[in-house]
Length: 553
Image 1 (cartoon, one colour):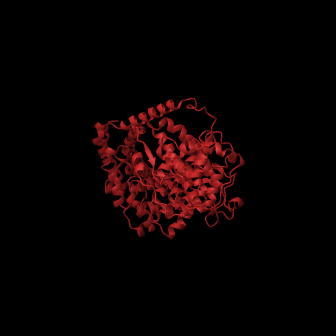
Image 2 (cartoon, one colour; image 1 turned 45 degrees about the horizontal axis):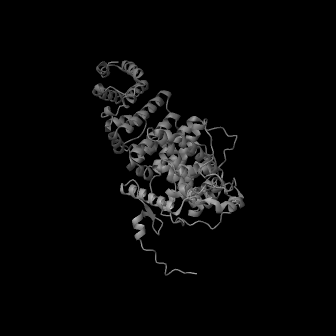
Image 3 (cartoon, helix red, strand yellow; image 1 turned 90 degrees about the horizontal axis):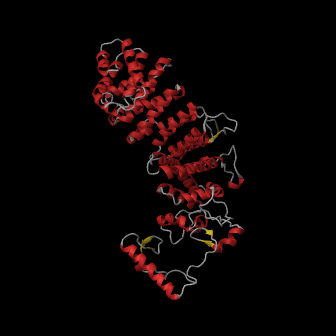
């Protein structure tokens, strides 16, 4: 449809004709996401014309049609100048029933009557427009701050229990976008809008949490119906917004209570199922991301369930959600290994799976570091006592084998996070780690930590000792410390050489190393007394540590 014709008629036609005109444009462009650059000026004028129509009284059906057209136009970030103004944003905020530009008292006092079906569609379309405009226009983001759109969103959150589904969904999405794109707004939302508390209440209501004790929600049970698609969608938007708002380091005692409440709700969510396995995994992924933002001291809420009880072996702690996290981690490892191999250099998919794996590894690592019962339970599942040491630690389908394989992965983030997880399970003991992984797989971590000479990390752990199996004790003298397994006897290649031949081969090898070193292909390294790597010439020149003050036998 010709844009010049639409513009000519738009400002002079009556409501009914405007509606028909824009409905035809929307039908023709409903699937259009890439626009002709030659018509940018015309589309910008159409944005202005639609806003002019929206700025005057009109029936809801005409408003909805105008907003549908504006939503399509707002996909093009180059034509948003008329919308990204104070007047334009206030028009859209008004259509969305967001009390932008008002003081807190006015927002609190503005009651909302029930929406008719037509009015609801107007609100939804206005919210969709705001989401597009805020996402695509930095100028609109600044105007949103100037007109206090965040305050209007928080006022809307207070009435969340009465939201129709799509109104709630797009209100939460707009809050997520604003808090993601404008970090300076997060503090306003937290301090003045009390958005963390309000979003927690939205999540609690959406998930139908029933409390049976302090920070303990009633167990859904195996016969519980799966969470509906609508509830799941709203919950995920609330989780994403909460993630942005909990990135701050500034916390006080009131925050501690709120964070524990969030942790308890997230535990409840992790025990729920949705209508599809993929949606369940997506919801759990968002829950894990948010758990990573909470203080690690709050994670005891995940296992302290006095009413439901727990396992005597682990001090009466309930480990059900820890097992859910372990199962989630293993699924993500399987997907990451498959996808990163193919998509690491030329697709976002490998990166997406990596981003889905590292948060759960980080969460389990920090939980294990700070909570003894969590570490003991996870170690029993991931690093059970060794029996068969004839197979290399990275070979096999057990969770330990999968994690050891990740220690030498091409992606640095995955490699470091997996290695740190296993190191913490071994109570940051180099000897224990090498027992389960072999020196070759652990070398990267040891270099990064400066522990090539052995020792322990800085965290203090309990003194409970691991008990080796008889099979491991008998095989230990024959284990190759580099590969971490018992190798088949290999013939000695120099056994039948004469001393002259051995000397010739050694000299030849030294010359090859020297040539590669001079060409900067390799750089010989050594280990300093403190366990860190350094160029070989430096380590040879380092004076030995003075141990004269130490006790000797």
